[in-house]
Image 1 (cartoon, helix red, strand yellow):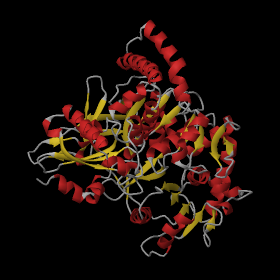
Image 2 (tube, rainbow, N blue to C red):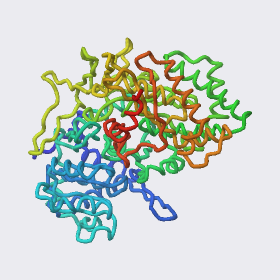
Image 3 (tube, helix red, strand yellow):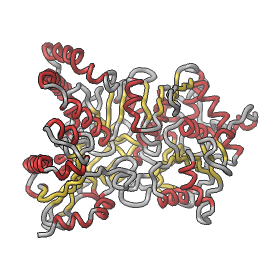
Image 4 (cartoon, helix red, strand yellow):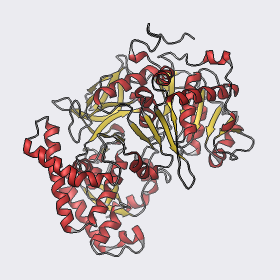
Length: 611
């Protein structure tokens, strides 16, 4: 295989889009040998942090690649990885890429049937797993005649008797002949396969090349302004395209510093330590953060809340000028600086958010009330949109090139978009994927003759070029009267009240809409305390409390007042248990699995239509 073309300087290809991940690793090791690249915290009581510089990362992955080669992994082989965000996962990913293999991360919450489907689809002979719990899930596949899986590598010491311990992979010294096989990837070679989270069916393997990833990285850099070698808190699953870009590929591209957070519930602790300049969260993460902050604010003395609310208003007014692209008046700028220094920064510092200059969200429409809430802190969540198939971000709001709160921004440089006659968003460009992996190893394109990808999302483009999402094409509700309703629009209206943490609207082929509503686990107890209610019995007790039910009734009425007649919710059921990936209602990337929820609550939904 011919190595990727290099520049006449012997450093990197002249065209940035022709760079490969191994070339970026080599550059970082040469130019920034001692610069921190990866940090992680031990799981023991003292929680000590370990850090590797880029030269150490380069040597570590070389030795690790030799170990994988000794297990028979070669160029073009798929290798499955199911681990949390721990160094073994991050370093294995890069080592396999240097070897020319193709790492495939699998969600830790994936169901056994999904794991079986992925293993058969990509034909991997090796899987790298975390510990005993994962071994128990993967071991049956070793004896499955329809699955090519041959062996497991186990990260945790002593957790996989009879399997290959991760610690045994390292090879020193690396054989000279093997060293010549490393780092010969070409821009058009597959870099990874990312399986979709399966909201409507079996996961599909999205093949992404080095060039597609680099095109997206370059396009993102054009709309984001960040300090050199910026810190990144890596807590979302590597099976999610967002974290693969933000937590692996962009750090190699930018020579930035990744802080691994293996337990997402501890991201707040890591935030307070790192105080990052950037933070990304899917909408549900921002919703939960805002609910937690609101709960704290609701318990503050009234006179303190007055000061905070005044600061919020100043910050929102300041953001409004920036959103419109207008010059902020001198007087407002001075008031904002004072409010930020005296009130907002101390509040943000408590959560480690005081140095954030770029905050973003994607994956699903962001509720406008959540965006407006954080604007009160001066934090503008730059909502973006994209798919696994577009290598992540295809459109985005930007502090550099402009933003509209509620929109998902304008196309990045690597893509163009248009709206089909039925409202579906179409996209094409250099960061749009190659195609879907087939069981025979071929790649099936999903593009039309002109290179356009039908995304399945519905939206509109305004006169300034900003894209506004309406809904998923397959999720649109068509009532018995033939009216089309966007469930996301209605659900976000319902969730504007802090008591309502989750909502699902139902009504296909029905004459009116009904909803399942879930109390917010953080906001509901705080609301009860602020209103003098006893929270005995936890969320189930609050669901049954007349005052809570009355407040939810008012929240639904308020949402309905902003919706047209067809969109209004006529009846609803209030639930106490949150939906999540572990119980199946959400995908690992926290998107709603509507079919699962409809099936699980079929009786409750049927009762809502009983006269």
